Image (cartoon, rainbow, N blue to C red):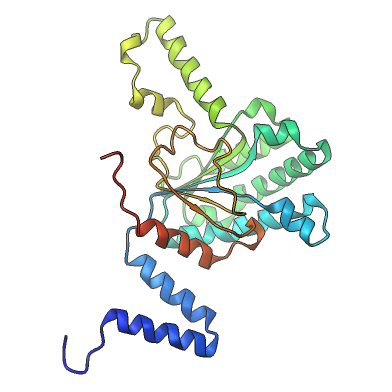
Length: 272
């Protein structure tokens, strides 16, 4: 090291002391961003948007209002993710189990919110400026026609883009997705287009909703829960998981950066 120089670790310690001294949240965020951008950025990030209802309940608000705040946060988070260069993002917005087991009024509110935000996505300057292709993954037949129509409008408006990809898991279940893929493979065998011995992992991956896209490198779940809840069961075999003890409406850019930093610090062996 040159005379009078300072090592990178020393600079980092000095910066941390400055942060404590001046309460520099923005400085810490800036330093964290520099650290993250110097490492490998995940090609595909999955996010389980959890904690909307509990966030609302703790504030004495109706549950459905938590989902609206969560939708606002998702629009912000998409910009953060794109700025970091993550090419594919999959968000778990509404599961089949949610639709079947939650109060009808709450589900209807969520579906109306999805319809509203899908139409906004279809016209969003950020989406078009960054050439983000929007894709609905899930059982479309379970969605009301007006909700499905709005989501398909976002798909049509972005179908020619290939710079970034945004998958919206709505009316989705990982088990249902695998069953559908297995059924399609069976139909191909029955029609003579495929031999049973030709069924392998590569074929099954191509039959998933995310066929043609890389499996998620990183899956983030908010609210502190440590379960998958049926999210991308096939695709997540070698994904890195980061659990954040923060409700989704409170998710900050610094939380995203910390999650990616954690991902960067892990050794991915893929079974090796």
